[in-house]
Image 1 (cartoon, helix red, strand yellow):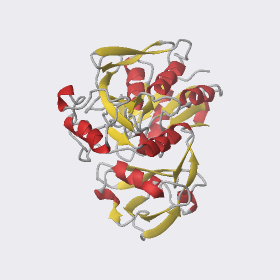
Image 2: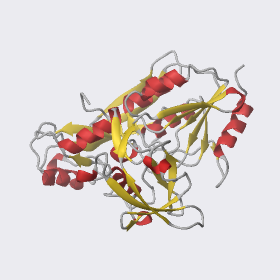
Image 3: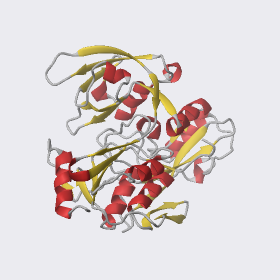
Length: 368
């Protein structure tokens, strides 16, 4: 990346690059809190400072910054690669249900996981020698991508998976470089266009805008499992679905910044937004804006509830310290932090959410 970008989602290193997410029931890495105060003995704005890794970790711990993170120069370069280009992985996304089970949520076509026969709905039992259910989902994702010397194409990861009540399969997969494109589009029944956005990485707003040029009578915007990402990309996406106006705001270091969609977007075509417990950060902000402004009907289950903003700061040695700098609010002033977004139309457990979305769209009427 040419510059450090503001993000709604410190899990982007794990989540955006793989489509996975954290779990509200996982114990937090640190208690939720605001920025570490200057009295902690370290600079409140560490940009350009010479901090050791230990000092950086102390700065995060002193403020109880749950979403703060320290990246070496190499780690952040790989992080940036996940935002802008390609990244190593096995083409596997996971989530955790209310029962604590770690399941495969998405599989990249033709990727190593797909070639091994892994499918959405399979349960991930182990990664390496550790039980997946006992690890935070963000840790599972990090291990799928690889850590240290393993974070490269050609390295291997061992998994144990099971489908339904079938036998446990032990698999050894080789990581490959995967495309970080996060937007897919397809037509459903009666000319309805479903646009799936897995994360708000660089270029996503343009990809959504391009997808909307296809003929359609209604739109289903699928934000399930979207782990958040770059603020500007989420606001740009809103600009395609709103004819200007507020998207939200965030508070940072004593000030408030308003987020506004550019004018000229489609504010009339019937729109349903799909969300679930893996919808986080910038994705929650977008869904909340469309809900607040009565632009869309939100369908699914309660979202994750991450309403904070992180700002990366480059340290003197090239490392990056990512710190929480504020909280965001939807256009009506709601904070989703810790509570999440409640859908307008809840989906029952096991219900076909895609079919439910189509029924809701039919009730809204479709554009001819």
